[in-house]
Amino acid sequence: VQVVESGGGSVQTGGSLRLSCAASEYTYCLGWFRQAPGKEREAVASIDRIGITRYADSAKDRFTISRDMAKNTLSLEMNGLKPEDTAMYYCAASTGYCYLDRDSFNYWGQGTQVTVSS
Image 1 (tube, rainbow, N blue to C red):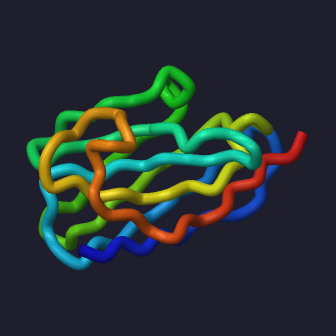
Image 2: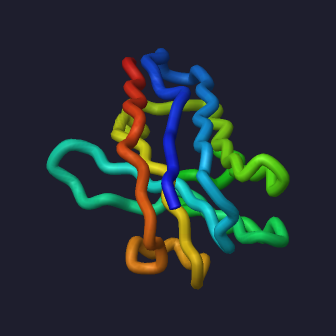
């Protein structure tokens, strides 16, 4: 399974961005993770094949994850962006579990950079 992200960029505090991910085939679960310089990669959100979503506390009420099953695509709508959201964002696919846990995901994209300036 290959996943490819797009849609990163630079915005000011309070701005919005939409990230997209294209998967080469169906997988049970798709998710977004992020990694800031000097920090561990952390989960942002995930969605399974029936649309059940999970969000990290940092993403709740600001980010929305969605997927198009027919197109094998994943999106992350990010609103109210803050400087602390600055990170490389990764799309990931899981053939098994859908927890907000790096170990649940088997396949990873190369990442797309999101930069939020104050």
